[in-house]
Image 1 (tube, one colour):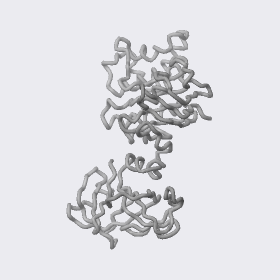
Image 2 (cartoon, rainbow, N blue to C red):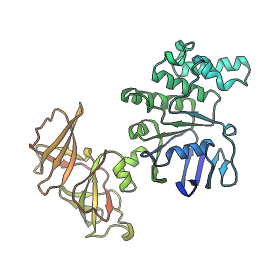
Image 3 (tube, rainbow, N blue to C red):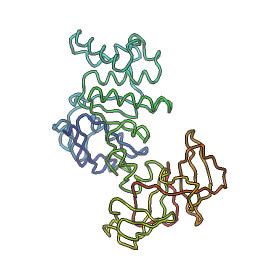
Image 4 (cartoon, one colour):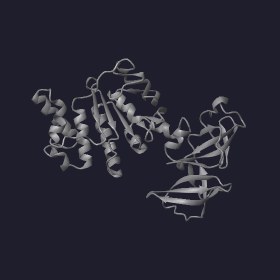
Amino acid sequence: MTLLDVRQLTLAYDTHTVVDQLGFALAEGDIGCLLGPSGCGKTTVLRAIAGFERLRGGEITIGGQCVSSATHHAPPERRRIGMVFQDYALFPHLNVRQNIAFGLSQRNAEPARARVAELLDLVGLQHHAERFPHELSGGQQQRVALARALAPAPRLLLMDEPFSNLDVELRERLSLEVRCILKTTGTTAILVTHDQNEAFAMADVIGLMHDGRLQQWDTPYNLYHRPANRFAADFIGQGVLVPGRIIGENQVRTALGVLHSDTPMDCGPLGVCPPGANVDVLLRPDDVVHDDASAQTAKVLQKAFRGADILYTLQLDDGIKILSLVPSHHNHAIGDHIGIRLLVDHVVTFYEPIAQPGHALSA
């Protein structure tokens, strides 16, 4: 059942359009994420859902009830939405128990105490209930903010870059912990972040945004393996685009050999790619396997040690550059030639090839 439905959302400041005709739906109990670079409009969308921004066009419904349109605007306090802010916004003069209980002030004392105790147990802060925010670590403060937002049992929880103030290791751990808490409580949530690792760890479905438009609304798996366009392929993960030519049904020839696609390859205005069409083929680092027995070799140009793995930048004989993620016990020097082969589960191609071969995509 759909809980949140955003249709043709348009937001503007004076004559400047910030969000243009954006739409997506989120099922009850799912965790969604709006992902994209700074300035793409993702936080503005979150603020519109919360009721802090008025719409220029489109409609937002929560639980089948319209809360925002060009002619209607329900105030934030009537939307039954919880909010976790980037800076947590805890009350410094209240202890943990009092911060969590803040949104329960209208309830009877005994049910409120029971709800706070339940949430303290849920977020693992039973032994910190009497501490004040300045006595807590960043991760503990984040859990207090989450518990406070969950206390009134909102039908939708919104989180704006909730882990951005934490170090990388704590961010990764907490993102998994928060997902577990949300799934345990059956809470429907929307997360805003620019960090794709955070998005992958947290979300059931991700909306990738660019310049105020939604580029793709999909599962993390499909965003990585089946990007809808070049921007999605560039923003998500790492990889390169190498030239290819369609040689038959679901077959494309590259400098590394012939790839067979399990689905028809799209050539835009041409429809299914006809033989002879020139395309760019997306190769991820995990598509290029190190194989000493392979006749195909490449020169090591750069290497980035990552502990269990090494990310190699390789150059083929014709100058095309590719990336390969290799177990770190295969430790080769710059300038070495190593054997490689392709192991591609999903062939992703883009029509209208780029000018220069081996165009690297950003991390």
